[in-house]
Image 1 (cartoon, rainbow, N blue to C red):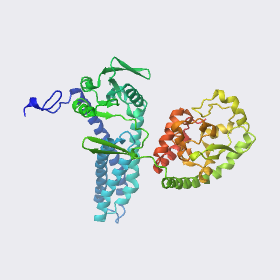
Image 2: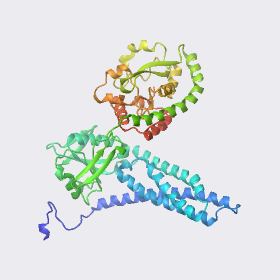
Image 3: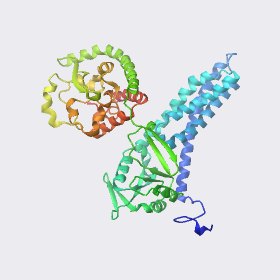
Image 4: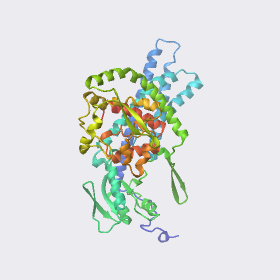
Length: 496
């Protein structure tokens, strides 16, 4: 078959696509950046292993029964080399599977386990007593340092330290609504910072799209996306949707070879945890599997066990500090120590929530006079400077100490340690549509809403966080939220 007869629709060529010079520079920069990150990781691991080796050599100097210096050094080299190589491989795999923007704790732990497994194999076959020191010193020091380095990089990125010049140059393809949603989502998340240089839109006559007071130029139609990407030397082309051509993405990916580094397919499947998403390929079709949320008794029973254990542990220190808090409350203003309020729990069941009293005893009667100044989101009533809150109440609310009696509600099965905010009956009356899904699980003392801004959140943000939790909760998620709550109590934000 001659070259002219080859079934290429455009720019037919028997040669592989050539990478453009500017893109080659960008790829070289990415390679240097990844090499630097890998070097830092290796240096951290070597330092942790060296600390163990130095400690072991010092202890073995006066102990004839200890391992020889050769054995100690060899063990350190094995751990460091195996851990560093495994982390390099697992980090690349984690990035490709969608966790490249997180702290990557799992690859760090996994790689450490591989390094220690290699050392355990050597210790088991040779009889060298070199495993315990690395478990006690190398593992905790190395993991802590690696996680700290990743946390620092994430903070750097999320606070915009990367800058528009170093952010990937992006071209967005799709319809008007999808492009607006994609740009807004990217701009609100510092970890996904992109420098959007233009958009490709199918609507004729539109020259620019305005998103949050910024105008983005329309550079052409979807069929011209590859040419535009090549002329602007973009790094990433994001397909936001709006095309009915089943072969558009495949042909676009071919056209972009040598002109961009990545082709990203944006989807609004955002409220589904990664653990619920699977990917499978077949001839001519890619299948994305989404496991449906489960609310069966067996899964809820696991959550109940965690709640009882945490509540029993928490009630011990709470019982010790309750007399002090009670004394402060009664000394500040007359009235009872505890405050009971009707709330709505799972499946719409009502219960009395317990709190340390933070307001005057006439607070409910004064509510009608304050509703006009409501600063709360949606049906929630909140005032940043509520005149009904007492001096001691202000302190209790700031550090969430007023909610400690709710661990008794947890023990009684009316609440969970982690869950959506327990609503008032009058708030539920204003619910509509999907908001009722918040009542599918037990309300919680803490939740995503509490560790993400609390009263500073809008109503839509609060509902979105609650619905995300309802559909994706797990024991691991609950444990992470509990740990983050401890940090939020020390550095309160949105608590009033």
